[in-house]
Image (spheres, rainbow over the protein chains, first blue to last red):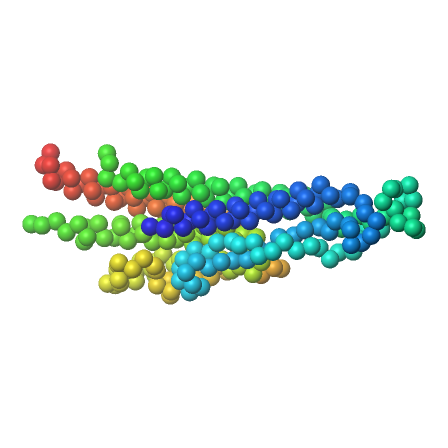
Length: 138
Length: 120
């Protein structure tokens, strides 16, 4: 039976989703962090997920999730004229991160829902395994 | 008169094993819900069962390739992922119940045999 592998698959998905939540938290936390130049400004981070087929593509075995990389968003930064800001450059301009708060919030909801779905899978598989262990008992 | 455990328990133990295999495939679909380009798969239970019935190799752990197919999504997504969480969750929970059913049948078989052995 393949229950151990199912637990690993669900675990990999939970790991990926919690990393996604991690980037969302970083993005939201730094959404208002102004900086002097474009290079110094925080860029929104996004994880890249990929499928790992366990034991070959053609076999009916499971597919777990792998986080390939965390990439930085290439969206343009928001430039604001704030001469009073300590971080302002010679022209009195500062740069704000390219974090889209609304998109981050929806991403957060999707990640947490996906996480919970995998927790449900895990607990269901656990109960299946336990009933299998009780096979033959009265 | 001998009791052939393999023969008597065959159908239900095969069904149980297929259900466990299918659980794994469905769990993979749910796990890859947000992976771009992932294509959801499923086991055709009927076809896989028939393959086992037709003297298939019952010791091999896997299911034949021909019994595995790709899910046709109701609504294609822009990132090429064909997992629809509602569909997968429904299939997963139905499959888990079917697993319990097979398990119950198997249990009844075993109980019947043990009653025959004890003779009361």
